[in-house]
Length: 440
Image (cartoon, rainbow, N blue to C red; front, side, top):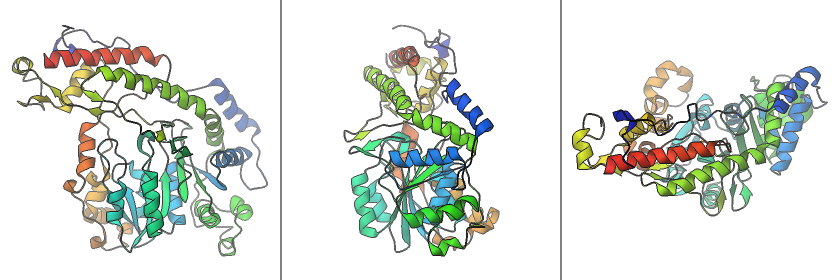
């Protein structure tokens, strides 16, 4: 395979022009459903649009949940769930450091104290043993993320939840229909949250939905996120009836047109999942021919539902002395080391036409919000309901696995269509070309 690298003036290995991933999938029937909702949408005697009731009822039934609440976003759902769980000044909430910020940032708005945990190096999922280390007398809630669609270690997590009597919130934003021991993720927690964001599998622009089997948690969610309508028909507990006109002051309702789109995508979810799984498992199979990439591992007792991105690990590629000598100026990060730095690897692959990068979102302990809390107080004085010293002080060395994972995993397009098979084949050949030129 003596083809000159594109970055050195050779032809690109990938001939299919970008963009290599376009989402969401669009359907004429989906558009018609949105139009029909706009033209003919009705309300119900529950104080909510008929399409919202339909989405909530059928989603809850699928997950064997008593209650479902569709809101404007998964972030709104998480904010609502934390309120329902009793997060307030001084309450500590444990969260993975490797997650999307919205998994835990609403805790600040309620006066709670986020406490971050390290993750497994191979997949970024929260480590149960690290959870237990962080529990104090102030800990009341644990939130977990089934990152990229792979379930967390639920057996161990549930033991901890039971032992310390914690409220468990599952962030299933990446993991629609994923299973752990043949049980759907989202059926383990006290409250579980799902995203219908436009980048997620059931894309609906912006929307979210939470489920629970606990009446009090549900009613707390309702009065926090709405007023009038739903509150007057669905709140039964006496202590919350006084809020029926006003709620707590927020309105997080889902838009009826978004609900129509979300409902359509929910009904197609199994089909969409099967389509994406087929392509990404094909990619993983082809990557067995590659030395420099380790494909994502799916544990035997787990299934991937939606997938959110394709995140393999970089397996450092050895640089031949000859290539290093001739192209030292090209390798900005590798310098004189024998292993090709991940940034140089990405740059060389990008030149070949491969859409690959490192994940944009860093682990939370690296961010300004979590790492510079004293300065955050100056900008957000409403956060200062707790003393500065009440917040954990984070250093990168406290999260060695998350640091390693952040620096050593790659992000590829989430191949989802049959037509992507030829693109996958071109990617694999491009990677082979790079490996041959770098290592020989």
